[in-house]
Length: 138
Image (cartoon, rainbow, N blue to C red; front, top):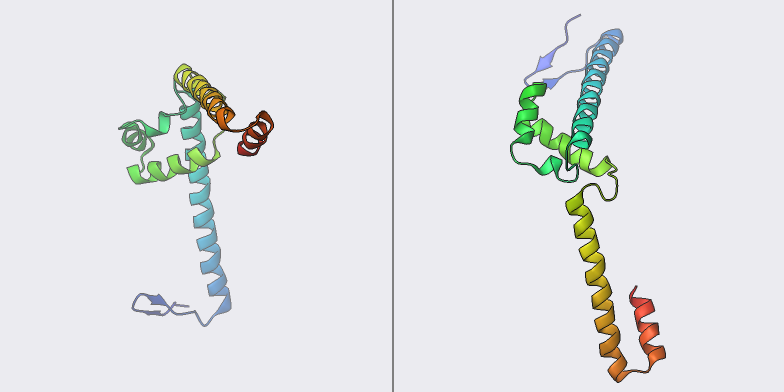
């Protein structure tokens, strides 16, 4: 039986088995696309984790375009894959030397800031009040 179409809107077929075949075909097509997407994302994740600096691998300029060409997809697809990977990937801490250095600098800055705040508050408040303020700020 033919499926009637009205401009861009598909009209439901009169025959129920035809409708089931159409829906089944759409499910198979979408499932195949999901499988291809998941396999592609697994490949990209492996490449990101194998890179020298995985923390910034998905942000390198031009890498997405090269990857898209090698995988045979559009660069916007790779961009969406990168966004999904960034949300789900778990990187070792620290993942590289620059990140380790940055984390150490951040810890030192927080320590110095806390020390400076403690000294400033210590000039105008009793020690118990300073400790209570610093505990609530953490």
